Amino acid sequence: MYETAIKKIHAAHTVSVFMHINPDGDCVSSSLAVYAFLTNAGKIVHCFVEEGNKFKDNLRFLPYTEVINRDSLKSYDLAIAVDCAAPSRLGPQSYKKFLKSDDRICIDHHLNNTPFVETMILEPKAASTTQILYKLFKEFDKKYIDYNVATLLYAGLITDSGAMTYQSTTSETMRIASELAEYGVDIYTLNRKLTKDVKLSVFRLTNLVLSKTQFYFDNRVGIITFSEEDFAATGTSLEDTEGIINKVIDIVEVKIAVSVSQAEPGVYKVGIRTKDGIDAGAIAGVFGGGGHFNASGCRIFGDYQEGIKKLLETCETALKAGGGAACSTDSSI
Image (cartoon, rainbow, N blue to C red; front, side, top):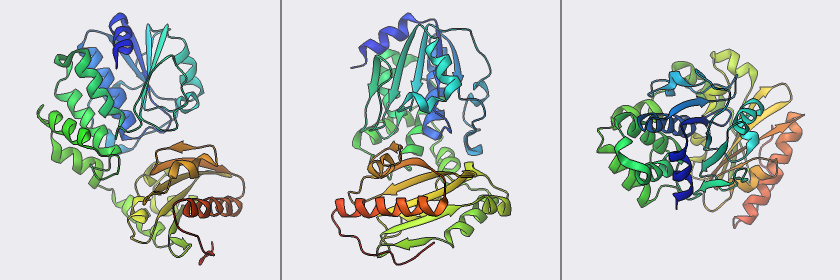
């Protein structure tokens, strides 16, 4: 299955690895796992994320984060994009650098992936991109998997599977987690730092925002909003919103949870979580976004109230498509 990609990796001496913008745990872990594995295999490897992009502080303890954007060559034998569903997700400057390589590969697990390279490894049923990478690494040569590589692969696995709780978790996911644990991975520390620990400022942001949750359609849709005022009041930023939406989708009655975060004036980042057969990707797709069946995202532009109105209309359509007729909204913003 991975034969073409493996041949290209074997042939390359210099390799560049690219993350998507606003990289999450799976993306950071995937890129650094490729870096560590191929460095062990004797390659010259450099990792890149679009300049100006940040990742959460709780990822900085992972091995090799210091190499991101540290070194660069004018061109590379091979470029590898990980966890990236479209060229626009790389960012304009990273995409230009990506194209300067002699050959290119993309390794991803997003259902809405728009192929932008000839050699593509796409497995939408995989819980994470690191789940795919582990199988690729084993087929390439498992002797290059060491403690740090295994740690990074496990980190991506638990962040994108919700610590093995999301619907994407399969027997293969669990089997790979077990095999990675054999390398001595510190499972407790990874789970604690990546899925449990929270800064006091983020705790306060969470309480502030959740206290203002709005519910619609007989409580089947819950919406939370992060404003610039909320960030200022709690000493937080857009990067600190990740995961808070899960508190809303965990409510028994809620089938669709939506988070709306003000990124800049007139620009809002939207996160969507769903359950019970409702397609989050279809909702995000209306606004030009995408992701996974139960977890997707997009951006809305312009007037906030108009954006919320359109989101609610789209959620109502999704509720009907998911098997239940929607009612009139019972709350307003």
